[in-house]
Amino acid sequence: MKFTTDNKSSFSIEITPLIDIVFLLVIFFVVTSKVGDSQFLSLELPKTESFQYKTVQSLNEIIIISDGSVFINNKLFNIDDLNDLEQAIFELENNKSLILSAESTTLHLWVITVMDILNKHGFNEVQIRTIEK
Image (tube, rainbow, N blue to C red):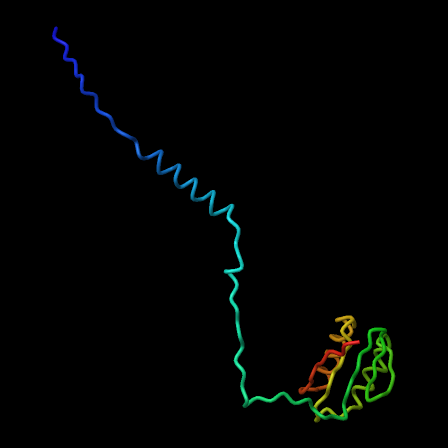
């Protein structure tokens, strides 16, 4: 029997595990990297001269105070007495605009309640503003 001995050994590198390790490293660095402020867009809104904000000068004004007091054309009502409040809103002229003002600490539930009553009585033009203390 004749055995052939090859002194020349073939040397090869397997690339498949190397690719797996590289992808694992890429995933690790993507997951652990911090997202900086570069992801947010600085937006400057355009300014126009054709639109001018004008507060409606109206006799209809409702002011909601943070203690639950509601002033309708300078008449005092309590937010808990919805029947009197609805009657006073019903007596307002609904063909004119209305200003709904609320203090910044007023509960949103009260503002939504008054807006719901206004909507029920057909007030279409309602301007809402916040009163700072």
